[in-house]
Image (cartoon, rainbow, N blue to C red; front, top):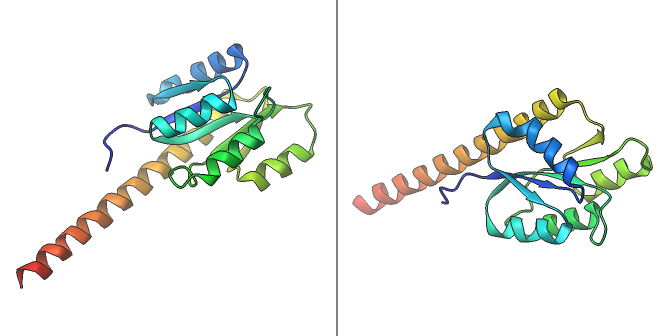
Length: 151
């Protein structure tokens, strides 16, 4: 099992939006990984453990929906929660499409920093609890092997 801390992947083609997300989430003291495109996001999820993705819907090239679909297709990232971020004036069908693509949540910009931080905290807590369950399962299996091998 990897000892690297899982990060929060921030995906947006606008530098100002990435800076705002970093400012809002810095107090969580978790690694924040930036990506300026869907392609960069895909490289990031393959390079390091990711606990959560905050993903802009509208980006040039590979948009947020395509990026999410690629993330969900990979075995190692299929269970990573994705929160879509989109402008308040975007098509109302975006929310449905986001959830259909595998989004765990959907937040409109401009977002309330307190609400976003609270949502991210919940997903980080779920991630940590999931890793603890995995650790305990591995420990139990190891104990079973030792007990079975000892008799």
